[in-house]
Length: 434
Image (cartoon, rainbow, N blue to C red; front, side, top):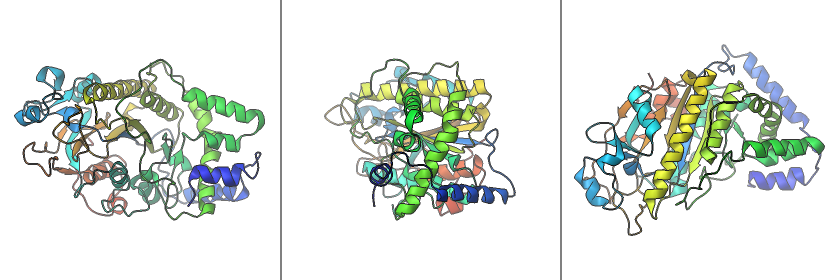
């Protein structure tokens, strides 16, 4: 199967530089509208409804130095160079605290709008970036699913919805968006704009796209990354998809992107200052689309660089600091818009790091880690049990919370639909949506 980029180059761009949207795409849109007409309720209008933002910490975030068990002697013994002292953390209780690079998340916790889930993982974990990312994206620990958990949400709960029901700001479509009917839109694909626009419009579209993605001020790049593909996982979206179906899906992306996303994103002029980091720019874009009234239920963004094998302390603290400042700007922007209560943001990472530090003052691929849920719709606090630092599995933390239970909590509590057909099973939920 060809990748999206290969297919576009060989089939569409190679055939005609002035190619326009074909009739079958028009018919597809008509079918979508017919489907929407038959729904008992329209799930999204763009002005109301809940919104989920999924934020990937790509590379395997070190949960031990994010939510720090500062009171545990085993932690300090295992990490003589990397361990955070009590004065270097934001205390959450008498055992754990947040890395001090995250003062905004610390304040959010005190205000009751940050849920911290400890010990998150899955049975028989895999330390491969790509396999583990795929497992999180598909919510399938056997890693055999052709669809993603968000895509199955679209299929099961958003029949007839606008194609922009999901928007990813990744370079590639996240595997979690894999769907049988509507896989959402991958926005960070400038070739789509080149494809659908011609002449002066093409140059205008590319200039606009470049402005959206250019840094607004200087910042040091993140260090410590050994992978730079934000989403990881399998390339090309849906396995087994025909070339015609692929073209149709991409055509819809482009059609909607040019006609609606560009227009709405240009509307909102925020007064909130965002840094020039990639994660800040991505969240800025999401806030602009929300302010513009996109009928999107799920946005997907990525913050890379967490594969910290070497000299971890500076790079990891800097990445967490970038995340914290980006979230501070994002939620301030949403509050200024009047949309803060509509949005919950959930982080995830494919795995944590090993308990012991390595010889390069870094950490290697591990297993259980932590994740955050943030927003006014979150019932803040600590969830799950922090894994034992002495009862280990081959040097790794044993998970205490199955990540699919977190998904189920969000699907049922925030997206208000039955999680069982989406996750293909029942998983214990937690009262983290309040």
